[in-house]
Length: 112
Image (cartoon, rainbow, N blue to C red; front, side, top):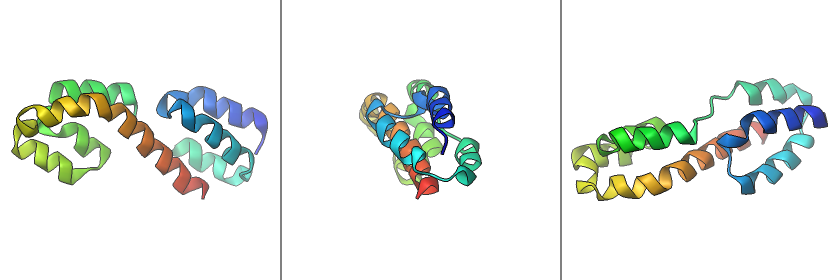
């Protein structure tokens, strides 16, 4: 893939990925064909900042986990009111990393 397209993609979407993942993404995108570039741009990445806001306001209902696709953990948080608040507080610290990892695995599925 063209270096300028890769740099443009990374500049526009770097907030969706962890800084440690950016170099790996760049290397894999440079080795990729141009045909998959439209698929990569069409992916719906979750915003980690939005997820922390959802987690703070509706995390005890498990909505943050439902949005990530982790329905089992979401149901657990829903039935236990966020594990009596404990699971909700833990997610406040983990939800951004979980979101970035989910975005990374979604990207890797298209690249591979």
